[in-house]
Length: 121
Image (cartoon, rainbow, N blue to C red; front, side, top):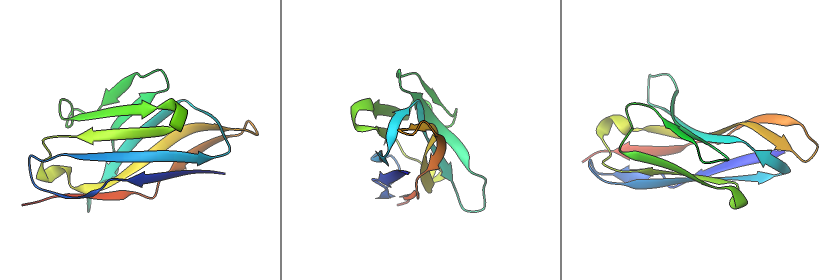
């Protein structure tokens, strides 16, 4: 099986920064795309950013210019650097890998357990 484990959430003041990490482990052959979603209380889960194994990245309009997604393919780890955080960024952030190919050549869609980011003074 494959697991995604997030870390780096917490409480930060408006204008501050946080860096989230998500490490994939298990019987992994390859991972094409990895990304971050978030879900605020009472709202639907939304895509924040994703990145391919080749480094192509896409962002939600609401985070462009403030968030940067990056990836270490050798470590099967994806990062989300969040700068100039705003109160509306408060949410649980979930790591996602929609097409993990296992060593048995099965393809899995995997989610992390989530990490809470709270932006408040």
